[in-house]
Image (cartoon, rainbow, N blue to C red; front, side):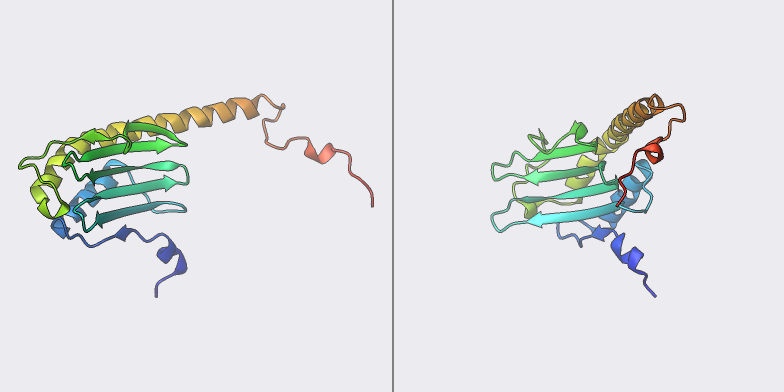
Length: 177
């Protein structure tokens, strides 16, 4: 029997029409291992492709560890053939890596133009470049999270002798009705 929480946390993995499904599944497993992905509340992982009639589109692997903490790796296909690769991690709007705007022009062997022109060799060439970047980007996002944790700890730790959030609220005057 499928539980509701399993449906809510289920990974989205669109069937691929650009690459071999086994290659996409392998890269998904590799990314999950690199980022130490754990299923949980507000955690998700997905692979999606975008294929438009004019040949543009792209693909992306996207993950979230929690509400404001995650990352993405993918490619935006441009009509000009100058396709933009992105690979980044983030915590609370602080990005580490190559973001999708403006992205980095990625030169492919054979100069594929439309999404129909892409194959596993192109995906694997991108993956070879992105794999070490993902680990580095995740460390940057984790550092941003650690700074936030320390800042909150320092702020609330100096508030009262107990260091508890909300300390002293019970001694506030109450109105009688």
